[in-house]
Length: 374
Image (cartoon, rainbow, N blue to C red):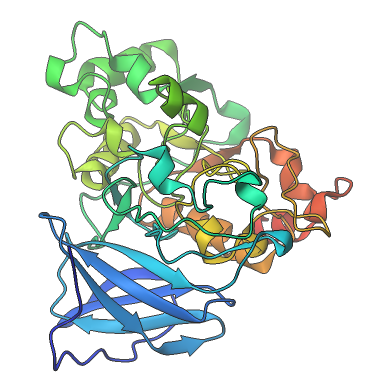
């Protein structure tokens, strides 16, 4: 169901930065970047599936923004971007596809219907055809949730000297899923990793830092969805700010539980390093779904050749462009969020060499993105 905002609703201008959804006095300020968009609609989605569309009319430096009165934390939302659909130039804007905010702090739902999520119409030319899909993806794709900042204190960072660091790489779910001393409801979760029995085990091993396999929200790749299988390892990122909801013991509590886990490990003198995947996303190649970045402004985020074809130097269907200002902003904003709001101590960069190949060229240790991170 779709409705438009109530008559008389006055959307305030807000401001463009920081990007994302931020509760403010009397409402929520929304901001999303797309320099090619002709129109951007904010879509507030209620639990019964009702969608309320609110057009964002303010645009600053390619960022569409507005402060919407009356919206509260916990509100599910997405975006519809009206703009060019020109596969030969890499542009794939399609307002029939509701998009996940790349800056979402929480993510609700999953990819349940691959056909509905495809941005291109079924035809002999496949994803390179000139016609966009007119199937609405609402109800079949993950969406963002407005989230208040803060939560449990993550404690004092241990600041263990690197030469004294002993790192244990582990999988949040796998490490605790069958642990006999962890209560069954907490097995496979952030709180399971924070359980005293687990922390004491780490201390007995002499561990000073845990390196968590990907805990940024991820989803199943198209091939897995088609086969009815699931991604276990997490190297298929969906959102670079949201902790993976599948590791929460209670739905919707992933942010609080992640911070609680960090606090428990910090209290034991154990640092938290997270494995981050800033080289590709779960949207895959051009035949993959339109979930977020592809529908916002694909060439601003993904490597393309001169003919508009996606360049794949990751083996995952797409490659984030390490020389793009939008990618540099997204990655560095994400890193700052995980260190300041979520309390982590460090990062392990998956396929780090691709982050030093702006434009897909030769590796450059002084590349834009690596320099910005440094």
